[in-house]
Length: 188
Image 1 (cartoon, rainbow, N blue to C red):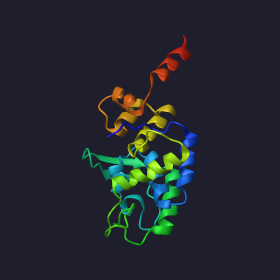
Image 2 (image 1 turned 45 degrees about the horizontal axis):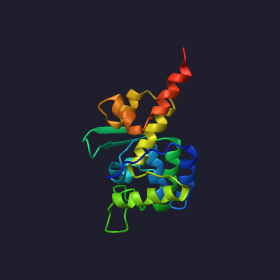
Image 3 (image 1 turned 180 degrees about the vertical axis):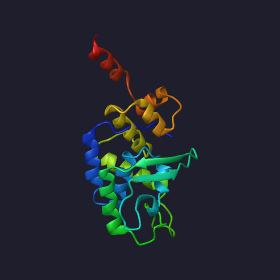
Image 4 (image 1 turned 180 degrees about the horizontal axis):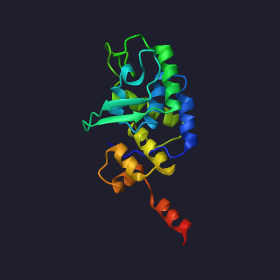
């Protein structure tokens, strides 16, 4: 498996969203991925009952048991994600709350596979000039931008289920240049 990076440039994120807007499923996958800290394996296992209520209104939180860790997690749903959910549900929801959100055309009630999610993300990235990207970049992008926005590294570490802040910093790609800039800008 090759090493992937977060999408650091907000304009590139915006460009990828614009590129994916023509396909509401792919747009929701990307938007939810960069706004939730969820692994792609957990994103693909989401069912409509995990994201909407019986009135088709987006839930305020996604609650799930993580596939990799077995831990229960509760993720807040932002306004932008809710908007993407509404748009997707209005066009593609077939009335079965237990169906997968990111359903595949192969088989009955099966989610798309990780390879298909990778193809979606990779295609959008290539279209806008983003390199070193994969499905895990979605989770890393959330963590990177949360950190840059001032979120305490301990909260990000907890959201990602990492064992230490140093692992989280390495994971999101905080570089030596950024460390140098932090020290030099303080100059007490």
